[in-house]
Image (cartoon, rainbow, N blue to C red; front, top):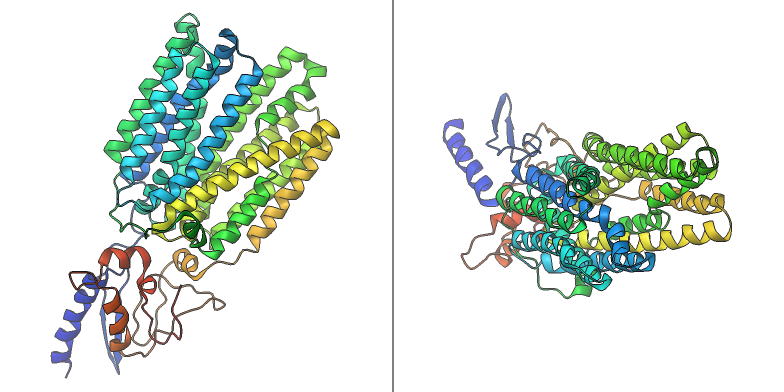
Length: 522
């Protein structure tokens, strides 16, 4: 009886796997003492190496690109002073450039999701930033620098959503924390090396600012070459041609609630240049103004070192815990503790070092895990819009926090300013802690499929939490797995269901019902 049945079972297994591109396909059939188990599965995401060529390429690109523009940023204030431009020009240049970059990310994210190939857009952004930064060498008036800086930051805004979408597409979902943390680590290393390179170049060139600006073209072009040669693009179907507002409305509700928590936290997340100002004022009475300024810069360097380390370590930790959002919520709470310590007005150099270290730890955790959670909350064909929206929310938060903390510090005192920040930090942590995961995120955060004594079909990884919607996969006849009508509706011109779409979005996004499930899964 089993002899004619076994070949049929053996042929059915590869055909379904090949046709629907499922990650896990295990069919257990139990007949008295006979157990037939076939599992011709492709390599699971847990067995894949997270440090692939794309992750490495994006990391190296971030290092060299940040090295380039941080070198220019380090000497920009002195160069503006040399051509007769004051602090007002510096503030206008930085403010206009940052605002343009942030809202360009939002528009670029919407545009990125409509493209079949995102890599050319990111390459253009990196090349445009490199040449715009080097153009400072030709500036003779402050408005020349303004145009160059605005163009460079425009390139940053264009490339950012595409870069993050490419990284998320080629990194295993269970390693998003490490992948995005590694990118932040490399970016911060570039931010540390850039100012040191600027100091060396000034000494080597006899304080020639223009030669320093021209030199930034070298690491900028290396960044372009690294991205071009190493980063690979996984083919995906272009997203639907929605309008911008419809694209925003199409973002999943859990992601919108996540953005609300990020925005509350960001409204208190003051610029860390205020830490330098804080340390300089606190240390000046005991050490003198010049010595206090040097100590503050040294403390900020220590801050950047821990920022770089925490970006990867927090990402690694988030990949090994049941819920990634808990690590980000802990980072938000750590920011609240940092703000409370700032309220003490301590004059101890040791406690100030602790404050700068904690600030570096929480900012690294924040940047790495906000991107990782965004990649999990949102389907792959909406990643560009998600990353662009996240950047815009952070930009608004940075603007509001700088106004809030600066106003309260000037009007009242430093304790009032950082108390307000602490309250917003803890509120953001609480909102994130209470955030409920969607079924899609739950499936990605699980380890392996559960085993059943009877026949089962596993499409992906199903969550173990009984409070979430789980599919009843026991005892359903195989003919009910994929109803003919939904499949027929999503067939292409070739008459076959797109395997890429099934892999990217799962059967539920194509109107498919799991057996025993009374509703469509979203």
